[in-house]
Image (cartoon, rainbow, N blue to C red):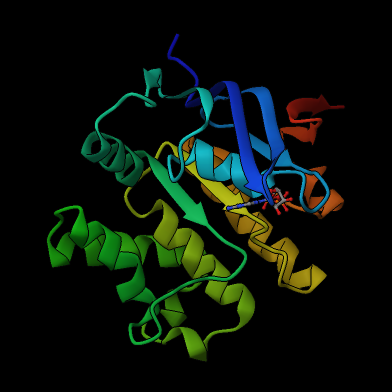
Length: 227
Ligand code: ADP
């Protein structure tokens, strides 16, 4: 059996606030398998972004280990960890962070070209993703010419353009009205089903969380499974 796409083991993270340590994660354990979507639901300030940053190899934990597809990452050389992050992990944020001067299609092509694909290969895959997300008519538009929901769908396409094993999303529908949020969520879910990637999605939206395979929360610095 293949290892989980992502495993967090006894993760600790604390911040210094005015000299006194603020314990955010206190030995958190969590595993995520391919083809699974998991909602991370917890109040503001509980540590969701911190957990996603550590899972996404953007910041190191103070203690514990992060396994990506079975590989321990904490003691990896920086360039090896960066390469693993670029290849294996896609991110979606609350705000799309698309490059304003490029079209939707070019925004999806760029990470592929940085990874070494030719312009033609990148354009083909961008076209497929745009079709898949119902955006084939919007490929030549710049982000400012797209609706909020369309921008987020392009951001999702960009995040999965290099075929990562893991998608991490921090409140990806937090800035959208409920109907648009549910469209964007459907797009995300369809991508998870079609590609078999593993998704961890921080959200305040309980209705959307209810449609995912699992729900977890953060309680006293630990990841706790919800019913
Ligand atoms: P959430 O995403 O659940 O809102 P965060 O992970 O952003 O929570 O933050 C958890 C707690 O850690 C908050 O109280 C926040 O103020 C604090 N925090 C986050 N980043 C830092 C930092 N770089 N320095 C100090 N405190 C931080």
